[in-house]
Figure 1 (tube, rainbow, N blue to C red):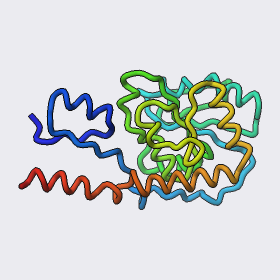
Figure 2: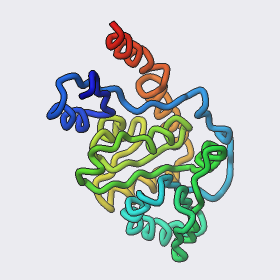
Figure 3: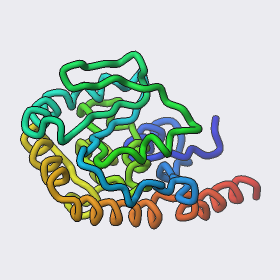
Length: 218
């Protein structure tokens, strides 16, 4: 019944095309004027590995537990792990006590991350996701590692603006590189923000939205 369907990625667009011929792809966008890391110059000994989500997606965070346990055993108190989005979640073994998501403090809390992670299963639900969590990290110059599921493989150029990890060994190796090299974290973070500004920001995509909406009004 819709005159136009806007899909956030190719996977969703392909699904929509089964029901409607008028489908365009415009990716999820970030307001890069709002998403500016206030802690870019922070220096501390403990490296925070962070995940942000919700009560409904905490199960995706748990895909990270096997490699996080290896990293905790390897680095001990040198790393901490933070979970935002489910204040009922805890993992005493890893020293995790989840916190609730709060719009007012979200940017400040995300900016406490030194490394962001986005582990996902390779299933139908995950393939439809549009990478918002990763784009938030990237806009804040937080180097990140994603599962190469769905649009994630289009957002990340492995080793340039972030990392893709297929298995436990790759997760451990790539996070370890970031833990041990502050300059690499800075370099990846800067390239990550550049990617968001150029391809996934409100400003970068606003003309596409305007063209679509103006077209409907003609």
